[in-house]
Image 1 (tube, one colour):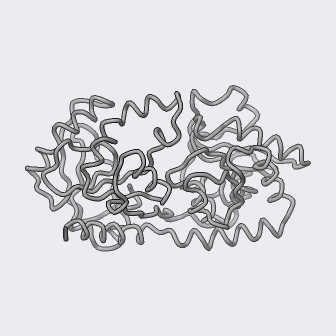
Image 2 (cartoon, rainbow, N blue to C red):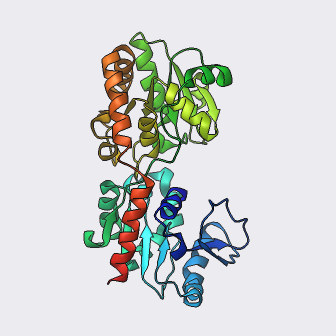
Image 3 (tube, rainbow, N blue to C red):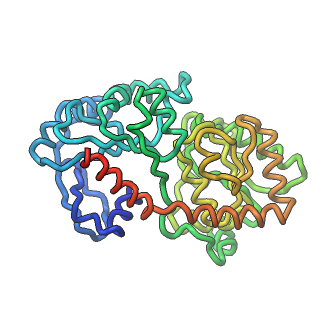
Length: 341
């Protein structure tokens, strides 16, 4: 939620907001602002922490007495003494289903049930809005779509190719993946699409940015795995890539797609969940799960300069529509809507 906090500061709304922190944890770095800091103490983490949140945060809010409470996760109060606004980033554990997401469904089952008590639910996409209505049985009149924004600094970086060669030793064209290598991101589909692109006669490396996962297959060693990188390096990697390949099977919003477009990096992805509404015609979207089509789309971007140029320009233009300042303005409108009853 750092982007939203920055947007609220830009809108001059920070003097009207109190941020609630866990007193047992270090306060995260914050931009200079007029936010009021309130702290609560938690005994537990994980599932017990969510139960503790449900049973204790209501009484803590009764002491603080804000005009409303904005919960930015499904860690929700069982009883809330003030109007409740909740941001739901996604309901992927239920929307995608499957055995591998059973743990996440178990972890967040209480929050999903308590979501019905919210006065207003904020979501980043229309796809997530439909999921909230379907899986939490909330009327669409209580759901408001507020897309996420591009963080400052995501823009085409001059000299990126030279810095990428020097820092990471990437001398050939490369396709980039950004995200965790879990089952939802389809690491096997990523490998198969890359192999298809190579069979089309393309000499290209596969570069992975982000954390690994126990769900990643053992043969991911054919790719260059960079792990976590700093912000400036990520911007350079986006800017220097031939394209972003994004085989995710489900997204509540799809921030890597937006970041790549903002940096002038063509995007190739499965056309599922929120990705068509975020990317529009500024990306090459193929049938969900079709790894051959995904690989051929990568090959097209690398062999058709006019297509790559069009996607770069369209991506930059579309990404400009997504700002955290706009998200903050709409969030303030949401607060006012709740306060006005």
